Every structure is written in C-alpha cells, then in structure tokens.
Image (cartoon, rainbow, N blue to C red; front, side, top):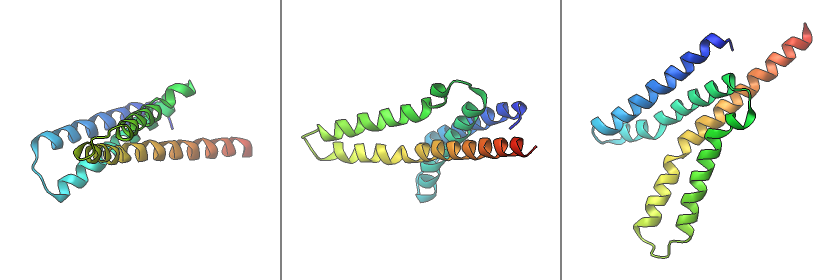
Length: 128
C-alpha cells in the first residue's frame, strides 16, 4: 500500500466511528439498527488497525488495539467470575463481551489483510 492511502484509512475509520456514534444516539430501535450498531464499529476498527499496520514501524504499537480489546475482555470476564450476586450483572457482562466481538473481528481481519499484503509483496520482490 502506498503511503498516500494511509490518511484515507484513518479518515474512513473516523467517519465510521462518527456514523456509529450518531446511529447510537439519534436513531430509533429495531433489528436493523441493532445489527448496524453491532457491526459498524468493527469496520471502523478494521480501517484503524490497517492504518496502524501500514504506518507504524514498532510492532508493539501495531498490537495496541488488540491488546486493549483483550485486556478489556479479560477485565469483564474477571468481573463476571467474581460477581456472586448473579442476575443482571452477568447478563450485562455477556452483552458487553458480545459487543466487543465486532471490533475484535475487525482487528483480526485487518491483521490477516496486512499479512497477506506483506507476504505477496515479499514474494513479488523475490521474483524480480
């Protein structure tokens, strides 16, 4: 990927996050809206992770969104495991984990796309 396309990825991520926040706040309920709210932030994190993979040189910075998601999920799971009151708390914890599935999928797909791109680029350079 050329460097001049990296700002487009960042802009797409910011636009998708703004659209997600608008849909969250302004629009009504319904199954279509629920599907949109559960998937749109995954696309935003896909663009953001792909932007980070293409622009950053340090590997640990590229892993930052994935580490934040894993840390947050571990924190929620720990809270669910140590909550002995039962009831709504575990249901809300499960909903939060379900809500984190789309961003985790977006980050994983971005890593797969970046790995495929670098693999093809290295093979193309070896053939020349």
